Image (cartoon, chains in turn brown, red):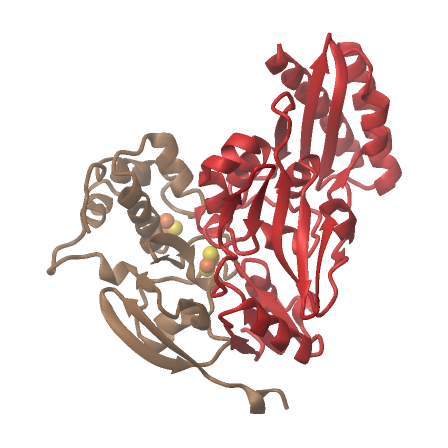
Length: 162
Length: 290
Ligand code: FES
Ligand code: FES
């Protein structure tokens, strides 16, 4: 009965630098929009309730959990996912350093970790270790024990990019 | 999977209020969404009858912190990130800034709103004890009425507030405290990030000639709702600001909390921790004074 009256939402937004316009169901989460409709599966679903950070994306320059954002809410916003941070076919320095310092094991947390670090470095290119830890406190990793991740982020500091 | 619902993002308060009152309680207000969206996902009964979400984030003027001569205004869409980064908040309401920093993770703080933190009156709303000791008021609007109410009165019991179905909380108003009021906020959570708080306390105190001239105490999480402990405050006023008084106050706090909550399985652990925490908090605040 309810579903009959469901109106689709229209959203216009920028995704990884490209303007997009689409219509979707109002109960769709940004996470599902990215993964299922736009085939950007770099964004992961872990807990689905805002606790693990695997679904982290950048929205208007800030790290957010895409499992806690509804499609309608992204109207007029700018979204960056893990697929959008490499430039001209070159990995982003954070990505390079995650590989170099062994910060990736199963890799499930990696996109979210990298984007949390990315959001931090955009506003604070020279964070100390405490600040790095605080920035990734909402990203859980079950494999690495965080040490390598923090190392990788530390070696990516002072990088100022767009 | 989320249930089916409609979504609308009105551009001004009046249309939001119109839609809300026309919806006959099948609508819910959406601000940060960090409570309601996972609530849908886990099938929480609190949201099961929702057929429409009214997103208030596009309404102009609700996402700002404004300073006036005697008070500061926090709009309904102000996030915890905005709060902890605000110079105004840091200057006048350091306990609130501190509480804001301890909430959730960066991702949560970037979305979750201060008003959303108490509008459902969950016991673990960390911003409530600081707001209470600062005597925060809230402004509530419906189509034909605007009213102000103290936060303490607004919070009725767990998950129940004085908000009517056709009303929206539009802002928090906090009077600037006297500069002599010093205080601290303490929170003990299970895990650092995303800890849903288990014990939280806020204290503001002003001493004169080693006597407690003014004191405000609020607890959260340990009591079913965030609450000011007025009796305890009354008991403390005029007493010497020393360890003996602080010990006595801690004992009284334990009693009071037992009285409010009744014995719970966790009391055996919580109570001594609470008393010890409170004692240390009072010592610390009084030392900072000197
Ligand atoms: S899937 Fe979004 S925070 Fe875990
Ligand atoms: S690498 Fe496996 S969860 Fe982090």
